Amino acid sequence: MENKNRAQFSSKFAVVAAAAGSAVGLGNIWRFPYELGSNGGFAFLLIYLLFVFVLGMPVMLSELVIGRRSQANASGAFRVLRPNSRWHLVGLLGVITAFIILSFYFVVAGWSLEYVFQAVANNFVGKAPSDLSQVFTDFTTEAVRPLFWTIVFVFITAFVVLAGVQKGIEKISKILMPLLFVIILILCFRSLTLPRAEEGVKFLFKPDFSKITSTVVLSALGQAFFSLSVGMSCLITYASYVSKKNNLVHTAFEITTLDTLVSVLASVAIFPAVFSLGIDPSKGPELVFITLPNVFTQIPGGYFWAILFFLLLAVAALTSTISLLEVITAYVTEEFKLKRKTVILLSVGVLIISSGLSSLSLGVWSNLQLFGMSLFDFFDYFSSKILLPTGGLLISIFIGWFYKRKDTFDELSNGGKLAVPLFNIYFFLLRYIVPIAIALIFINELGLNK
Ligand code: PHE
Image (cartoon, rainbow, N blue to C red; front, side, top):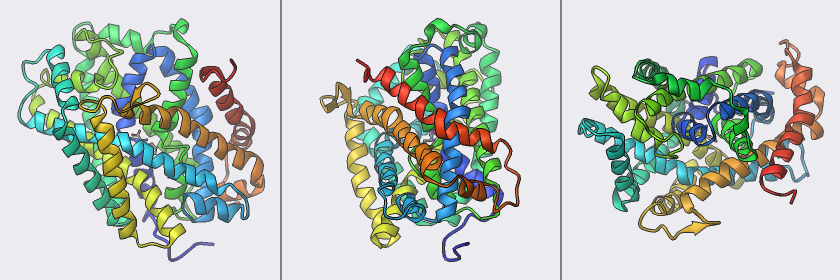
């Protein structure tokens, strides 16, 4: 039954644009290249692609099924599908994960705003990578400026989410995502034509299996889930706004392909330049911020491209932070019967504190540490490498073992109207492969076997 009072995305394109907007973000352009660079290049890429299609996409489909079938928020959804059980806690875990991801994501999103202004001020011209690295470190370890941008980003996100599903989220995703794609293509072209670009291409595409370690495997798993926005009920929430006519299998396939394409293109834009400029590929979080500004200075009209790029990076981040805040908002509004506005205001308060602390932990308050990592690194590590895979594990067990196979089929086929290609394979992956693979990866890397 279609719930007439619930907000809905207006068209099929809007669904893909919004979900892809959630998926495509800093995860693709900032995080993917630096994880790939720190984890040996091709080995990481290969495992990543495998995990995206074999583990990530089945979990994504499950989230879409859970959300659209129940037409409820992250936690309410499990209550609708399995009343009187504890499965609703998986939704709550997702809400907590959303808070933790946002606590570092807002900081990096804030950096992209700072870089818009750096680009406007033409600050990249004549700077070698080492100078750009210094600019980055000086900025991120400072107290006030990064904090300021982080808070600005929290407010922009809250403002859009306040405007509601159709007016806010849809409009932004529809227009700006395609533009981002174009800029990345231009960057790829320039990067590939720089001197010594082949070394970067080799790093990306030349097999070297000796580099595969348990750390690389867990990193690839975390990155796959993070980038696809799966494992924390974000897509459950979005799917609850999806029309009963939508073809969920197509939607999942489109989001996954698009997201993966952007990540791969982002690395093609970055690594040839990294090697051409002699930057260490395992530089970590600063990699994109010190490589691309330099590439822009070598493109005709680079001044404008750079401004546009960092602006669109901020927008890509925004469509992701919106989806994360929407998880929290939908949950608290529906479960505690509060007004959207009240919930958003409360969340803004909490998030300013948590993301503010995480920003400060990179500089002036560097003694703000947990498990030997800065608060910022801890939020990043804990959410993508522990919480998302755990969420994915639980969601796959739910659909694989605790929900009727025929109901899953019913939802994916829109009540038998659509063919569901590969349904048996999908269900097999979900029931056996996904949970076992995630469990093994955990045991292997987190030393649970020692
Ligand atoms: N997928 C987003 C990105 O790559 C981040 C995200 C994770 C968004 C989880 C929502 C949920 O930037």
